[in-house]
Length: 190
Length: 190
DNA sequence: ATTGTTCTAGAATTAATATTCTAATATGGC
DNA sequence: GCCATATTAGAATATTAATTCTAGAACAAT
Image (cartoon, rainbow over all chains, first blue to last red):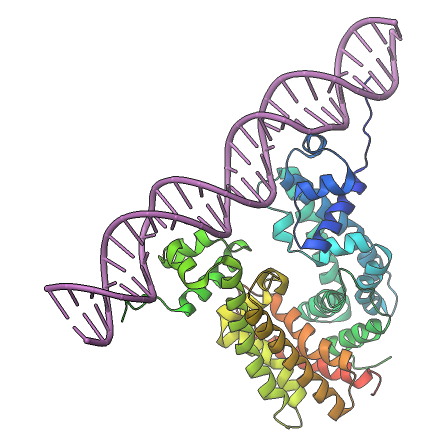
């Protein structure tokens, strides 16, 4: 029927992360230079820069939250610790996506001019993670705020010391896990 | 001998923070609109946007580090806890400056095109804080990495949940202090 | 009051980047 | 091989924001 496309979304998403890591900002010119995909093709596929960034964000956030929720909802005794460690582990196994999540504000990537559909997809990804967090906190009798800090904010802060260009040292993991335990108040240490 | 100026640096620095809080970016147009100071005056005083941003950063970082080091070097038993709490306290007492420090990457504010003098001032402010941290860690037998996390990264992550627009709840403080204690209690002793 | 100097003002310019547009180009089914 | 259609290409344009420039205004010393 028609010509098939010559590039994958993932190529573009990776270039977004790489541009972000290098310069702290994303320009379409940089993506064109990085990937060899022409500016016309980018607009054909994504319609706007905003949409491209939002899709990149959604892709990254879904990948991360899958891991995060898997740990959180595993039912294991150490589900909390595992969820806290999902962040450094994600950085190690999926660096490009981690850079997108860690090195920019969501607001830059999910502006209000994108399609309602995309806005909803992002909002619902966030909502689902929040709900999972709440359920976890409720089951264990932890404070939701404490869980937000211990499971999300602190692990993210820890990896941000190294991203975008340095590897995340293994030593971080014990710190993150201990901080989580201290915050939710169980007090035990590894 | 000559005309005196009609505005203070602090007015401009505050507008930078406010523009940052509102839109996540700083444009000179926004500062002009916010303050009523003309674009010509801004260039007369600061020479370039980069220099203005770097001066804003330096102003904020000095104000914060004064508090931080005061706590860290107090010699008190709980000097670490107090240094960790310097971050949420600074947000409460000096919100505009806290927003500058918390809501943007240093790289955006201290680019390489600013004057050597300014570059050095920023570098030396950072160095002094790092040195203070190292001294503290060495005296107490804590790991430097653990201190970086517990005294800087985690407190910052905690307040970032609320900045730029929400007040920092008092409950944060206990979390931050506990996380610090948990982290230095587990790190390898130097 | 005059004068030299610094400061203010904002229009004009430049620079950087996003977006649009038209013309090719490739693909797969017929 | 030809056609219909989706895709690519990148030059041209529009947009946004930074920077420069020239004129005028305020101040302080004399």
